[in-house]
Image 1 (cartoon, rainbow, N blue to C red):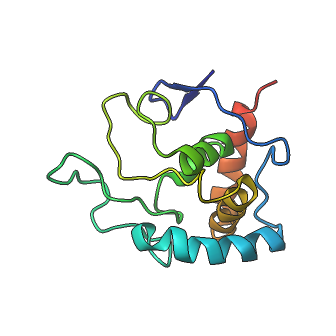
Image 2 (cartoon, rainbow, N blue to C red):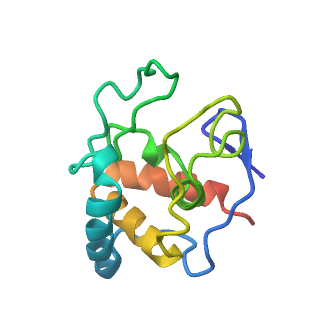
Length: 146
């Protein structure tokens, strides 16, 4: 089990064995991921990964808008296993979010293969600054099962 981001969120998830670290320098994955992101993610998270306006402010229904996936957001604070789980299974209260949290984040596990999800995450990570990428890699390595 792993605590995520100091929020005491517990989950048990593993990346597929083909990806222990999602490599943003894999040009094949990045190109494929960019195309998938454009049709599956950009409508909510923005064509330039900028997220929805006022993404930190709750909507009337209590949910938060889609966050950015660029350096200004919090995506890079999470290890790859959590990011993979969020895309594959959606945001699950008590596992990848606080237990009382509700989200509009859909699960893509029935529409995207594991390899496609990895490609999308490689694309997102390929846009990060070297400092952000280094910090996210450290988080991923700290959370990897030993």
